[in-house]
Amino acid sequence: MRELTYVAKRTVEWREVPDPKLRSDGEAIVAPVAATPCDVDSAILAGHGFVEPPFALGHECVARVVETGDAVTTVAPGDLVVVPWSVNCGTCDRCRAGLTAHCATVPYMAMYGAPIGGSWGGLFSDLVRVPYADAMLVPLPAGLDPVALASASDNWSLAWRLVAPHLKARPGARVLVVARGSIGLYVCDIARALGASEVLYVDPDPEHRALAREFGATTAEALEPLPQSYDVAVEATGRVDQLGLAVKCLSPEGICESASNHFRPGELPLLDMYLTGVTLRVARDSVRAHIPEALALAASGRVDPGKVVSHVIDWEDLPAALPEKHLKPVFVRNGVEDGS
Image 1 (cartoon, rainbow, N blue to C red):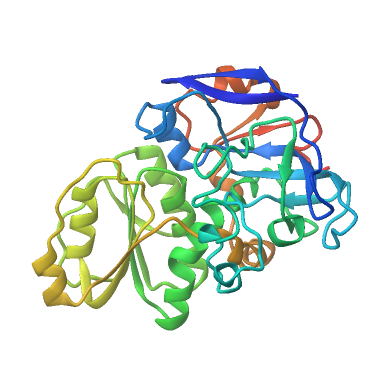
Image 2: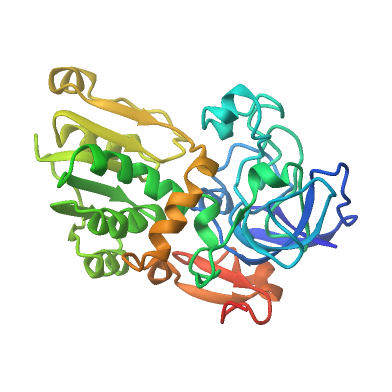
């Protein structure tokens, strides 16, 4: 089979590797049918990653189940499923606590799309082995478009987690979103749907701001300090200076969620944070625990994740098209555009 491999800055290529095989009766083999780059993939393609190439790329997709072991009970061949980005067993203490990104059964940071915690391949591959099928795979609800939900493996479900629990605890909260990619736009859509009284989206890209306005957000090209103006802030820029500005905008006991990979160091306004009583969370997400609720919100019709999809591109064009700068391209196999 072919495995899309990152080989150098803005360069990927197909490489032939052996087809994956079932290694136990609890595994599954899946074929990605709609796959999309995560915001961090864009940083990797731009040469800002921290892992040296070559390695298989991709960790967001909807896939079709091809084969299952005899012990798999939750999915069957032919099913469309969301494949979470991190590899997890579902039964260790951490997984049972919802910390699937920190599974104690597999090597630390085991994931698709980067050789961290072992080599698990990438979701821009013709076939993928899923070692814990019942724990990991989430059936795509009937009626949901796999193209629109290609990002449910990570960014879409992460965006749900960044705001949904906070809006449940603080109905009508004011939300600040400082972003550069798809995560922030998903947050705008979800925050509006879940009753945020105000959403401000900050991004220098005019096309991104226009889309945020379609989701009901007000927008700004740059962030000015607005002390005690927002209850929840979401930072998804990868820039510590922007994170620092975001926390300065929080109301007393406000919450800031940083969904970025901060590859470069920087300083935070710790005294301001102390005086305001800020809660800051900087984390990669244990997304498997949130995928069902995020999909349920998508199925409700109150949100439209498909609006964030900037391009729908044929699977065969991955090597040429993936390195191009697009907001959220989705690469599809034949017949997937209509959900078949």
